[in-house]
Image 1 (cartoon, one colour):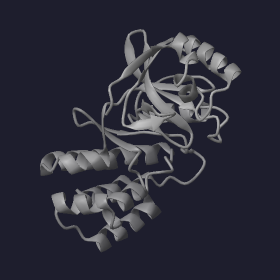
Image 2 (spheres, one colour; image 1 turned 180 degrees about the vertical axis):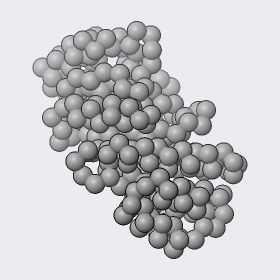
Image 3 (cartoon, helix red, strand yellow; image 1 turned 120 degrees about the vertical axis):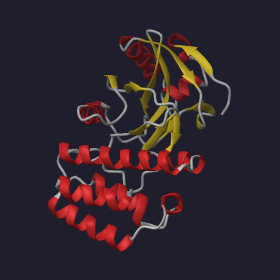
Image 4 (cartoon, one colour; image 1 turned 45 degrees about the vertical axis):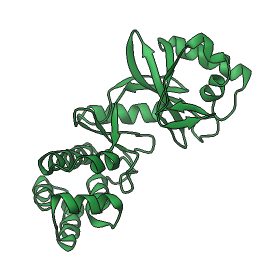
Length: 252
């Protein structure tokens, strides 16, 4: 990770920061409008740091919809998601609504504020679950985090909120520096389609033959994939706490 660079909101008009603010290209009027938008959100400065790159500048992350950096609001460090010009989304209002619904059941980083081009939320400092799993092999700790993943997915299912991207979740599960699990990125979430959070994350962690599932088997020991698949079928049909508890016992 490169050294961080903190830039005041006013100085985001300068390159290369303007090209990150309006990724993938800086447009003069758009840069000015976005700086005004950040000021309205109370953002004082932006910190460019992280393992990702946008316009050859360090960022926390870069996805199809937005670029994530650190923002300073009243002295607090927050995560700031900035809408890409080519991201295929008109605004962040839907994602903000889904994140707030997730927050209502104790899931996801804390929502802070939203505008057309920006989403502010709690900053989670840590590792993606797949990277965390590669570092921590203590079985008890491992079990606790995996159990937390499943429990959070159960709460989303109960709330009728489908995340939509948990069957292949390397960039949607984060573990912070004190071992707390966060489900992130609710841009594809929906309350209109059938929920599949528990089934999706179980397929990712236990059923497939990915690097993550191999790590899970290695640390937690052998589990019967056939029995897990059968329990997932029951859960999908019934979606009761009894079915979930049976699945939890088999998996963790």
